[in-house]
Every structure is written in structure tokens, then in C-alpha cells.
Length: 444
Image (cartoon, rainbow, N blue to C red; front, side, top):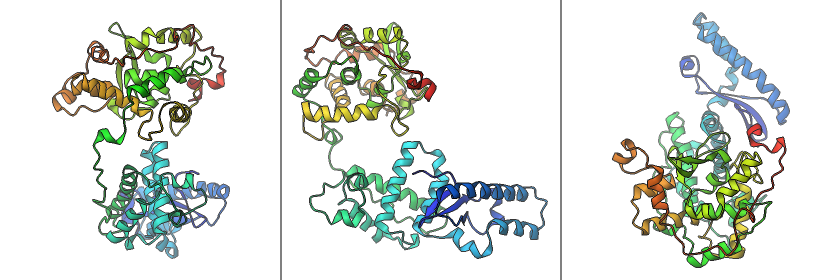
């Protein structure tokens, strides 16, 4: 559940929480205004929040006029922060600091980031039990990390209704990955750094606690073998109602595009650039990209064209479909990829492999590894994959590679496997009948 801005919940009660503007700090003895709304009902809290926001805005406006005497200024401040409640406004309970941190930072977060941060903070509170933040020293944080290393990933989803101690008491728990542990430590580090910056604590005890993953980057996920690839190609379903289940894996294995990038493609993103058919990866409409470097032009591999991909696109154009995969639905958390991602995980385990390190992202690794083994320059591989160029001379000052250069590199991808199914437009078409409600342009 996400609360409106300036509204937090603590011990079942709702509170108003807002940061004092820098230009008005001289009038206040605290950094934040925290005031109980004296209700456990969210609907009532939302109503009271509106009234409280008006009072605070009115007070800030009056103070900014510069026309109030010292006595009147103190009276205006005490109207929104009574002296008897001042101890509440500065409190150092972990939950209070978390509320302050989220209230200040959330405007710069995406919806997905907010989910990740609030989920991490829930785990932090569960492990540290809402201690006074001033009592959280190096030993406490080390103990926190130790518990993280023994907890499973997605704990609250896998063990609903159980807290940390309940889960730790269970047998045969598969611990979360080092990468997941480090993500939680990074979130705690950011929170404690904020507390130190605000003067709530003297120093940040969570610095320098990241775990070292001794595996090489190429060992974190595996590429598919030739045998795996053949299993994928043999078993991909040809279903006119769900064309994405056939095309998306093949697009990935011949382009290196991320799952999110493929799932959100619009018909207009298939473009002729300098005489070469390309994917235009961008963040227009309801699309998103991982980083600025992810915005790029990637040529369409000749193998895709020979198997009828452009014929499929032509069919969509004739049907006036806005997106390539109309069966995929959009979610605020992760765009269009969730439904397909869930399907592919089942498909992968049933038909391809039970190796947990071989996932959809392995197709992207396969493209990178194939190009690397073919002797393609690293900067060209980075351009295709949408990574930031490490070289200052090419990354900062050099222009992006022309499609013809990237296409010549992509042509080196030859898996020596022929599809065992006829994949021409007569066999993989999409008879789309969608309503206005399904049109993402109007929805989002």
C-alpha cells in the first residue's frame, strides 16, 4: 500500500510528515514537521491530511512575507508544531527516520524503485525491530548483514505472514544471492548516510560492508549451449493468438535486446535507417529504458528478416495495431514484460534446462559472447547492447556507430541452427482484434 505524500503510518496511527524548507529553518527547532492525525483509518487520515497541508502552506507563506514580528512568527510556528509535540518532530526511532527519508526522496524514484526501497525498509525494520537509530552501531549492522546472508530472496512473498525470526527457524532455506544482500546493504547505507547528513547520527556505520562476489562476471549467468538453443527453437510455440511467445526469444538471440526493451516495442519502433531495417530502442510513450545509453538503434539481423519478421510487422501495420505484441498488458511496476517473463520461465524449465543460471537474460549474454569470440571490438558490442562506453574518446566525443557498422557485426552471429518450423508470415500471423480500452496510447 502506498500512501499520499506527507502521510506515514506508525504503530497503526497516521502522521503528517513534511520537511521544513531551507529558507525557513531559522524559525524552526527541527528539520521535519511530524504531527499525529490521531486516527487509524486511512480514509479519515487522507481528509485530515488535506487540512494539515493547508495549515502548513499558510504558515510557510506567512513566514516568507518577512512582515511578522518575532512573537507572531513563533505563534505561527506553534500553531502547526505545539511545544508539547516538539519531541515528536525530531524523533530518532528507525521508523521515523525511514518515514522522513522516503517522504523527501520518493519524488525522484520510479514506481519500481519505490517498491524496492520500501520492501528493503520493511526488512530493515523487521531485523532491527525499530530501534533508536542512534543505537545502530557497526556491530549491529554486521549482525544485520549476517541475518541477510541467511534469509531467502523474496521472503515476504515466499513466506507470507512470517517475520525474520520465523523464517530463520525454518530448515533448508536457500539464502539470497550475494547480489541481493548487497542491494539491501546499499539501501541501508543510503538511509544511514541520510541520517548522518541530517545530524540525527554522528557517523554512518553501514559504510564499506558490501560483500565481495569472487565469481567472474561471466559466471553470474550462463549462456545457453548449442543444445539448449536447439531445444528453444524446436519447442517455441507457433500460436497466432500469442505471436510474442515465438518471436521474442528469437529477437533476443539475434539482437541482444533486453526483455523489457523487446516487450515494449511499438510498430513505429521498426524503422528503416540509412537503408537498413532497425529496432529503435527509446523511452517514448509508456516505454522506459535502463539508462540513457540504452537508447539506441540496433539493426535487425538478416536471419529475423528471412524468417518473416518484417512480414509480421507489415501485418500489424495493415491491422493498425500500435504495438508488436498486443497480447501483453502494461503494469506500472515493470511495463509489458511481466506476463511474458513468467511464461518464459515455465517454458525454459519445461523444455530447455533446469540450470538456474540459464534464464532469458542468457540470450543477451549469448549475443555478447558470440560477438566477443568473433573478435568484434568491445565498443561496438557495447553499442549494440546499450552499455555506456568505457572509452572517453569514443564514449564522450565519438558519434554513435552507423547502422551498417553494427549490422556487419551482427551478421557474425550464426548459431548454425535452422528453425524446424516454417515461420513465414502464413504460419505466424496475428489476427488482432483490440478495443479502445486495450490501446496503450490512450491508456498510458
